[in-house]
View 1 (spheres, rainbow, N blue to C red):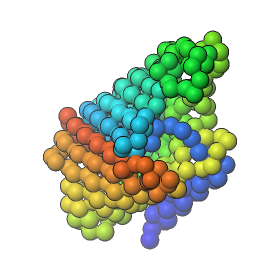
View 2 (cartoon, rainbow, N blue to C red; view 1 turned 180 degrees about the horizontal axis):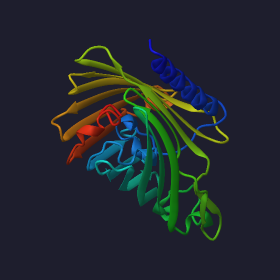
View 3 (cartoon, helix red, strand yellow; view 1 turned 180 degrees about the vertical axis):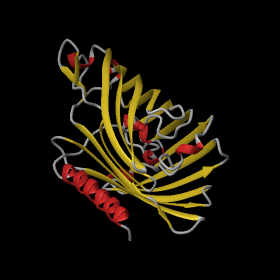
View 4 (cartoon, rainbow, N blue to C red; view 1 turned 120 degrees about the vertical axis):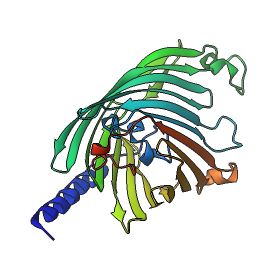
Amino acid sequence: MTNQTNRAHKLHIAILGFLLFIAGNTYAQQEPIYSQYMFNMAQVNPAYAGNRAANSITALFRKQWVNVPGSPSTGYLTWDTRNKGSNVGYGIQVFNDHIGLENSLGAKGLYSFRIPLNKSFLSFGLSAGVVNYRVDLRSAMTTEGGDPMFQENVNRILPTAGVGVIFATKSFYAGLSAPAILETKVSTNKAPITTSASNHYFLTTGYIFELSEAVKLKPSIMAKGVLGAPMSFDYNMNVWILDMIGVGASYRMGDAIIGIFELQLSSEFRLGYAYDYSISTMNTFSKGTHELMLRYEFSHSKSEQILSPRYY
């Protein structure tokens, strides 16, 4: 093993250790959950905007806890790009998140700036936008009529912002992000309602093992946290065959076992599906969670494939 390879492995270990150190000092968060996060990382970290050096459009819809009234459903549409030879990536995302009486419809811009290194890069990202936050309190069924807490609906336009950083090579990546750095509150005439909390963190890391020309193995981990609650982890393992078919499984700590199937239909189209089988008490009431993803890429930059592999 060469000195350069040794230094690269030491750097990977140091970064991974840093992420685990931070993970040990943060706590769980309540941002929307996505099982296929590893195939559209811009959703959790704006530093990935333009990472694939292509005009890329990704759509995702997730229906959680099927058959449970008021269960979460969320969807987004993201466009991002980076021109060949440029270090600037940017994009736009529109999203909708619904749970119970609450609905959040929003849009945000994404910006990233990368610093090329020796066969690797470091990228910093920002996101900013607005959210239309609504709570249909008047439709709630209460034990006593006339409860003043449920006489006025909430309908507000609120700001949203996030930051992130990633380090990546051909085979390794690690990222740290805070997609919701603003603490925003709205209120009715009777009581305040907290719509989002500050200090949300996402820690992501993964490695790509080339077992052969036909088979690649990609383990990854995502840690999610917010101050004041236990940490949450997603452990994932994906196998890619002939760069066309991806099959994987994930374990979301204390919550679900997940099956993932990805199909590269052509050089432009990718289809992904995930099914979450709940291992929590929700298993008694729910028939699982379905998540569907579709990506279309208009163009590719062949010179950037080393820094932007299709596996993340």
